[in-house]
Image 1 (spheres, rainbow, N blue to C red):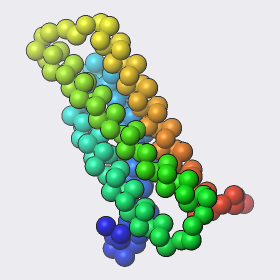
Image 2 (spheres, helix red, strand yellow):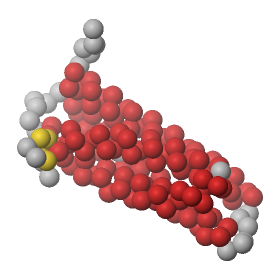
Image 3 (cartoon, one colour):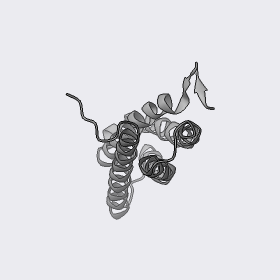
Image 4 (tube, rainbow, N blue to C red):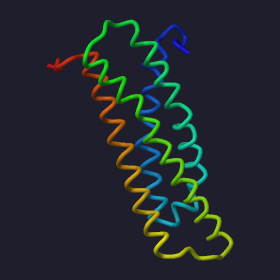
Length: 154
């Protein structure tokens, strides 16, 4: 997919990734740390994580097509390389979501979860969430630099 309604697909899809990654990450951390949030939002978080995982390679592929419009540059190469790694950061979000579903289902059945497992899962969730959020920032920043260079507003 290279265009959506005549506009470059990457330019539109990237906005979904920029919103979904930090939103999913924040809700995952809340779900890992706060059982009441997990009970209410685990299925929404699962859907968000799944959509994020599905959209990430589509966005990267659309970016490769879009990049062909521009001449080669170091900034564009950096951006495409970082963008190609984004899948490695969003898949762990889906994996920790699956583990949180297991915790949720156990709790619904009245079975407790080992305290050490819960703490480890919370730490893993925070690490995956921070990593994904930082990486989406790095990819976006490199993309802005590839397009705008070092120009500043004002």
